[in-house]
Amino acid sequence: MLFPNGVSRLSIRGFPNLAIIPSRPTTTPRISIASNISNTLACRRKYYHVEGLVLAPVIFGGLFVALWTWKCFMLVTFQNKIIYMPGLPPNARREKIEDYASRCAGVQWREERVRAADGTDLALCVTDVDLGSSVTSGQADGRPDIAFYILYFQGNASSIPPRLPDLSSALCMLKRQSMGWDGGNVRCTMVCLSYRGYWTSRGRPTEKGLNRDATAALNWISQLHRNSDGGGTEGSRTPAQLVLWGQSIGAGVATNLAAETPMPADVHLNSLILETPFTSIRAMLEVLYPQKWLPYRYLWPFLRNHLDSWNNLGVISQKYTTKEPSPNAPVVFILEAAKDELVPHELSQKLHDRCLDVQLPVMKKAVAGAFHNDTMFRGEGRRAVSEFLSHRISPTRGRT
Image (spheres, rainbow, N blue to C red):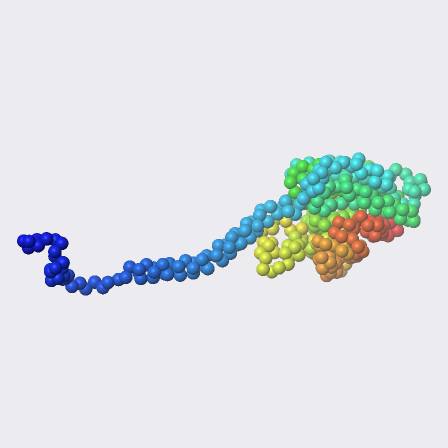
């Protein structure tokens, strides 16, 4: 800046007109910086507050759906491991018949081996019991008048040896009851099948695999009967009477065998014992997950295991009956646990009603105070089974 001569920079304050320098007018409005910052922060606070309210339920809801979907996927993928539990208890595969021999009341059990159609090596527990008054009096010869076989299918856990004491007790009751029979010598052979993956059997359990195992056991019984009958021709041999006995999932295996597998020419299906049965795996899904808002009960289209006894009874009826009840139709005996904590009473009642609808002869017994796995542990259950078998085997009542 130029200053007049004699006027210093400090003295410019003395000239007020020179101190005021007019500025050029502008059209840009003045904006308060503080006001602008406060408005921006307010908008940001409001934006993030709404976003948090929306994201929280979306994140947790998505996580919930993802976990649900994962569980459904696992249920479908590993359904065989959920339904069949051959490794429980942990020592189930290491059990031995000898460990329970002292509790079998003199009934001698032996282990046999058989191969399924796909080559799977299977274990069987087998025993022979001679029945009838001629046996108890010592007058029986070596060849029985009637050959009776019981093919037993276990439940979904443990192995055959721990079940042998209760089965032996039922056979002893049956033998005592046979003392009142009028004549006739009956050889009763009980065959307990160890499914693939169970006890000392090889393989992994599936419904298709269990069906093959049951067929292999049936063929083994047929071959045993041919060998014990002297190897005569099919027309000259007396057909063996067969009882299929299944407990829990074993009831489904028994009805599968009776419905889907043709009986050998020398074997006649006499009756079925369904111990604590259920109608199907689909029905058990609805029992275990009764809430309709849960997705698990709707997974039945993805089931690879069905064990549909309700449908099998209809097929069995078509095989053995026409419009009228046939004397050759197998008798169905349903043994339920009065305090079953797993299978409700309604399912066994549905099976009973199903037998009546398809004209299959049926009997039903509830064991008082018994839980799902207690029916044969209780004397009432063993007595009910032995009385039913006595009625079916007795030479004066049975069919040859």
